[in-house]
Amino acid sequence: MENVSGNLRIVIYGAGAIGTSLYGLIYPHYSNIYLLARGENAKILKSNGLILYEQKNNNPEPISVNVIEDLNELSSIDTVIITVKNYDLEEVAKDISSKLGDGPVIVAMQNGVINQEILPKYFSKVIYTVIVFSAWRDKPDVFGYRSKGIIFLGTIDNIVQPIMEKIIKIMNLGVSTKITDKLQDAVHSKMIMNLNNAASALIDLKAMDDSTISIFRKIIINIILEGIQIIEAAGYEEFKLKKLPDWKSIRIANKIPEDMANRMFKENIKGMALSSMVQDIVLRQKNQSELESLNGYFIKLADSLGFKAPYNRTIYEICKEEFKKTPFKPLHVELVWKKIQEKLDKN
Image (cartoon, rainbow, N blue to C red; front, side, top):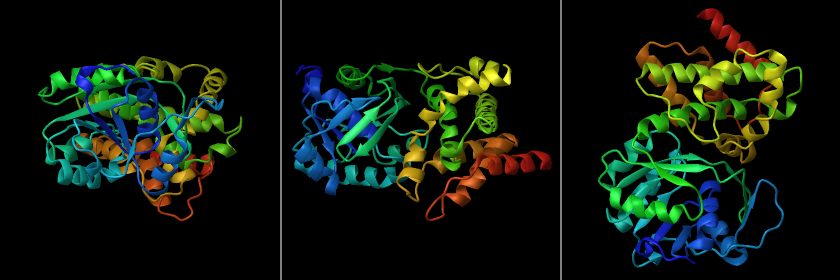
């Protein structure tokens, strides 16, 4: 183990895919880190440890897990990394605040900007993140990730800059982490790429074949192109995110021959099948998702700018209705395409 940055005591609050994977990457190099898990998840992780693999499970050795089930189990905590989804964030913030007050530095690992509305109500020292890192859960103690990716850290007021430098040194032991002074550009650029999460959950990817992949590609690329237009109109600039396509490449991809575009796009469908919204809505059949904090945010922003956004609006409206159904069943891409065309005709 390496002793860095004054041996900060860190708690990762949330034993989902991102939180547990982040723990598994850092712990072999830094032991003063804890994972907050509860119930059956905590029991299994305490007993079995954590299996963390990259892309393909080759049965690596289990990683020991410092599991806590309540923040009161530790006498002092310097930093809390919150990895729960936006829909659980308010409840988690209240729990941390009631037990730790405004003492620790909070590192927020949620998609979008809603955490910038919630967390300052409870804490004065908040670091926000933009995560280019895809992870998933096979079992409570078995997690996979596509690649280590990169994490950007930033603040709104820069008051926690010194401790952010210490936290970065620790996080860099497991995953590449950098500071950005363009937080809002970075957050909104990442949100554009997250817009396709809703479509990938709504549409039946297993029913996709060579005859329908072109339709799905058109839906996805137009969702993203609309997102770029909305963000640019709102005054944000592109923040280039490693391992994600830049805006110029996306615009070019919309103009290349269809056969070539479809072949290139086909490679991306596997990654879409692992999106956080697919995991929530399709795989776990939860009735909660980040639809409002991601797609809903863009619709509100479009409305404020007088931007119609027919692709994003149609996907958002269908998802809002379909995600309520139990059990949820993904729709065929041709049905979704028909609804989009109806919206375009009205406009």
